[in-house]
Image 1 (tube, rainbow, N blue to C red):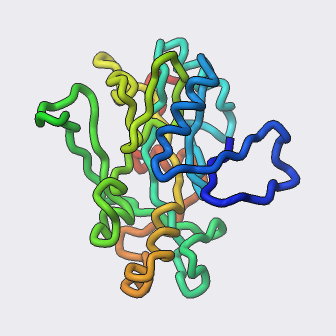
Image 2 (cartoon, rainbow, N blue to C red):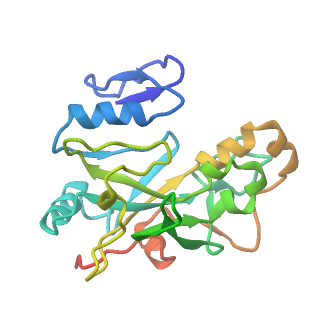
Length: 235
């Protein structure tokens, strides 16, 4: 299913069963409808210009990691968003260059998530970094987090929230208490595109490059080496 602000021309290679739905400002309503319509199905939720990576995705299928998560009695695969960006903005003024994409190899931090009463939530964290951290003065607070549960199984009564978390607490937990779980990553040009589209940030930023920049290898091992995801107990 494709959520769009404006009508789109259907690509010729897109499956005929793909539905186009007008997107609201708060996408949680559309996601809730999708969850209700697809009980027990696994769903991957992403924006345009985003790419899903999981451990050993070059040789293992998405079905295999879903089967593994199911065997571990997990209904979610937590993901970290990795901001990708063009290394040369004069050549790629929209901030997107899939042939020579860069990422930040350091400059990330996590903090324990708290509820409305400032009580720490068990095994939930907020992750920050990337372009949204380096150029935070141009990014609204609610858009700065990099943690997201982008891959999950729809269950009855599950509700999605505007901050991209779920109302069911266990769906927001990063792992079981007794071992690390398999995690995934989403390579995203979303922040780069937004910073280049906004007139204020576009005029203020001449380059996304800094000492922490590293060219992305478009390989899962690169993301595992940098600590963005891990195979957990999956051998």
